[in-house]
Image (tube, rainbow, N blue to C red; front, side, top):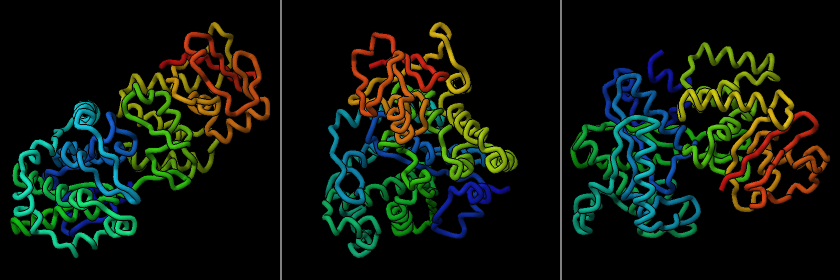
Amino acid sequence: MTLFEELKYRGIIKDVTSPDLEEKLNKGGMTFYIGTDPTADSLHIGHYTSFLISKRLAQYGHHPILLIGGATGRIGDPRPTSEREMKSNEEIEHNIECLTRQAKEIFGFEVVNNYDWSKDINFIDFLRDYGKYFSLNYMLDKDIIRRRLETGITYTEFSYMIMQALDFLHLYETKNCTLQVAGSDQWGNITAGVDLIRKKTGKEVYAFTMPLITDEHGVKISKSEGGKTMWLDKNKTSPYELYQYFINTDDSKVIEYLKVFTFLTKEEIDALEKSVKNEPEKRLAQKTLAYEVIKDIHGENEADKARKTSEEVFSKGYSEEGMVEVNIKLEDNMNLMDLLVKTSLCPSKSEARRLIVGSGISINSEKILDPEYKITDEYLNNKLILSKGKKNHIKVNLEK
């Protein structure tokens, strides 16, 4: 299977700027980049779906560059309905440091910061050297700009497209980068970079987008129930918690996720697809998905521990002496439903609510009938035995 065929099979290539790109991808040897702005101090699972493309292309002989947007992050890309909240320079610098370290640890490739080549460009040079290549008609025709015209868009946001195009030009001139990869919502910005390079240098470069990955409800994969972000930093989202997130994948999505999130072969995925159809109660596809993701992000040891804990939680009852223990971060306003989902005693809040109301959940042997029951600081240094029915018991160690 060629690289282009594999990308198509896995459903991770959507739009391409030129039909010539297929041959170039299959041939290998391209330098490409994919980027993100430092809006937080950790990547999340949505970034992982995108950045994982760097490993796939590297396997076929391409050279990846991961870009952290220290410059673009200071102004913010246009969001569909409103302007992104401005962050302080201190917070942005902290986020850049964290993301750079994390990207190198997980993906292992060259990381650059666009602030390094953008910070010394003055306003007049920006307009003369780059702004003159963008007509208003061209920019207004971009989908994200058209949508924001209804609610209003600032000049700062309007300039984001030019800044991203400048990144592609700089990497082309300094690193012979001839390909940009991004999510499908970035199509307007990446084609602007292709056009800028063509206008300024007369050379042809390329780009392709990846479709956004969603759950069975159409929600972006970076969010779980209730809008909780699945972080790649294990201090923000534990490997066990991330494992449970994937092991609860709906049958209708698990094969798609195996193609997107893992490096399993087509034959291995086909076998798991048969398992989903013929023996769904075993959830073999979900277990494989969860294990492979944790192994790639946090290593085989963490994946083994997460799998073992998950299997013990669901298959055994315990006396307190031999009970499985899990460490959970105590968050503000955490209620019993949240805790049940985090420990994976329940796959969803709706199921947790049903069990609580039906007298199926206990804390320290006391039935709790209120789904909104608060898990407070009083449990931080005290015993918390969470029980579902008579057989499933977990000792929860709450941490701040």
